[in-house]
Structure formats: C-alpha cells, structure tokens
Length: 213
Image (cartoon, rainbow, N blue to C red; front, side):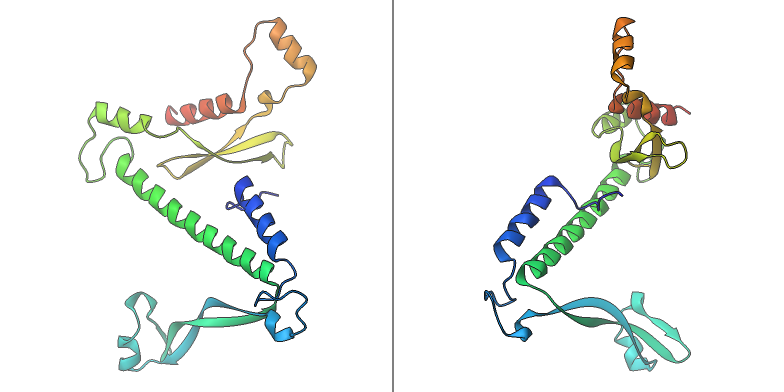
C-alpha cells in the first residue's frame, strides 16, 4: 500500500518526537488528568447548510458558492466535531493537516510555473512561438521526470515505477524488472561486459521514448 504523499523520513521523525513528548497529556497539558472534559477535542471542518433563497441571502453569499435549488440556497458553514483525544494526538493531526495544506500549495505553484515555463514545446504561455534556444534552456532547467511511487504490477507481478512528466500531466508506468537482477544474472552481465541497468536509466529511457513517440 502506497504511503500518503506527505510522508517523509523527516516528518515521521517529527511526529514520533511529538508523540513521545505529549502522549498521555490532556488537551490542557495535565498528566494523569481525571477531568474527562479536558480530553474533549473539538475539530472544525467545512460543511454545507441551507437558507431561504431570498435576495438578501443570495447577495451575501460569494458567487462561487451560490447554489440555488427549489427555493433554497446552499451555503458553506463550519461543522464542529467532538472526540476524545490526548494532546499528542491532537497535535499530530494538526501538524499533518498543515503539511497537507503546504504540499497542496506547493503543487499548485509547481503547476503554475510549469505552465509558464514550457507549454507544449511549440507555443509559449501567451501564444508566442518558442525560440529554439529558449525552449532548450527551459527544458534543461527541470528534471525530465518525477518518481512518484514504486510497486508491483498486479497483473504480471513485475516491479513497476510510476513517473510523472512535468508540464504535461502525463503519468507513465515503467517496467523496471531489468534493474532487479539475481546475483547470478549480475555476474553473467559483468562477464559479458554489459552495463548495469538502473531504475533511473529505465525511467529516463521511457520518458525519452514518450517524447519521441
């Protein structure tokens, strides 16, 4: 099972440190606290409510949220959820939520920059034709692919790498079984002077084949 995108070794270490420091404490920081209300953690999430579709209510709602149906206006409202949690659990949940928001903002910024840097290789962002030299410089300024995940193909049971080609929205599933040879296969390859095959080389070759298809 693939890990969530926010999981990195540094972040996992940070969560472990938070749990070790605050585990067992109530939300007010008391250890062995006998007051059950001190463990009531109230969280807020986005939800939807309905109001009568009067002109005043419609005017007071942002245009992107105006959903009118059968005389009722759907509006975003906060929804409060309460559960029992320790201070460590609450801090971990809030830290993870902030990481997910940061990663989402970074992905949006990456897509924005990719769209401005190189569109389809033929025309620029504003419709101007790319100068060949400028296009090559822009392409060299970023990696040819991003390694998203690795796993086993569920049909052929072979190792597969999932790579993303920046600026295109294309995701490729690359068969990387040649990079995982047995010891005897590696000795046989060295004996015959064959170069060692790596996952990076296979992914790069697949991306180049896609560009020159």
